[in-house]
Image (tube, rainbow, N blue to C red; front, side):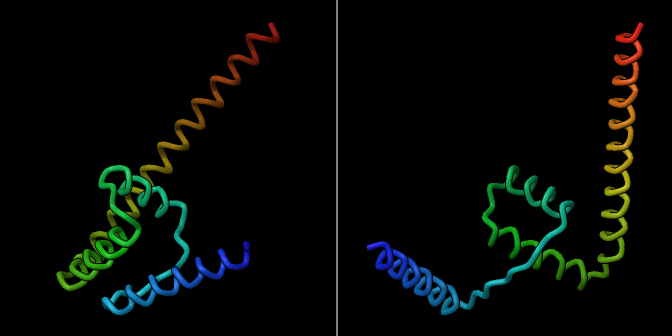
Length: 109
């Protein structure tokens, strides 16, 4: 019984992939960085887009940026934004460590 269900599911997935391919769509797979995952989560939260929508739009926007000579400024912005996030994270960590130090001092007195 279980084998029949697995086989039926595999057939269903195969038909789905064939329909997508017939519509001119291509499956793209890969791994993303933790930073990109944060961006992905924020986009999903704000737009409710599917994975396919996000990937398609990201590729189209990247292509438009490339065609209009905007790749370098966008990469620079991403680098600056990442530095800001890292600095904020370091400040928060420092504040937490300072707070823990004060609590430890107060507890030992």
